[in-house]
Length: 135
Image (cartoon, rainbow, N blue to C red; front, side):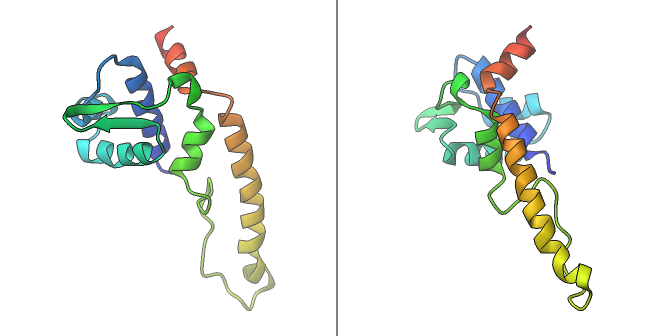
């Protein structure tokens, strides 16, 4: 799994803590990454209506209250329906009974695991994470 999900949560919690819009440079300094990566993830979060930026105002802010942004929703938005928690290897041998069927079987199992992950993450909000950090 890549780190985009964790970085997205980091960005959302940081924006929840800030009173004013935050620049991608400021966010990048907190994430300890570059502003280009931050802007890419912010585009995802903007498309998902989690955050906003306004013309004439530099920076990003939450579009939805932190208490209403659950981690399951963020996970689903960052990882589309065709992306599993783990990659399934490709190009298996179609002449082998295992190789011919493994992808389909793993896909079914991984869909169940993905749903369990989403269900568990949905129990937590950005406000919960912010609260844990603040205490």
